[in-house]
Image 1 (cartoon, rainbow, N blue to C red):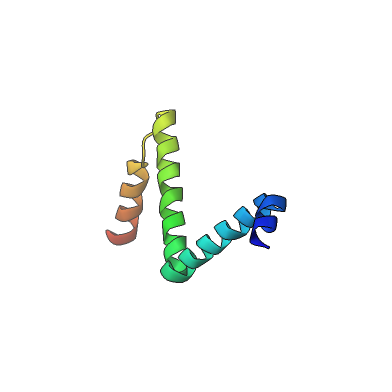
Image 2 (cartoon, rainbow, N blue to C red; image 1 turned 30 degrees about the vertical axis):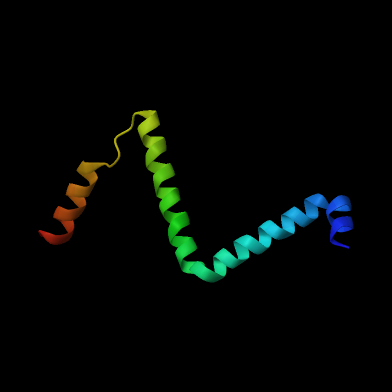
Length: 73
């Protein structure tokens, strides 16, 4: 049965095995850890794109105005 399944449905079998593998990773590490990891990847992608375009990483003048308006009234 397993040999026939592998010969006739190799892609579906491999896809199911990969889904099961990632499902176990999800169960071990948890949903929130995966979201934090995805967020960190997104932040890295965002700042990497800014570096490639030659833009400054942060608008320091905006931050200084925001801090001064917010806490030094």
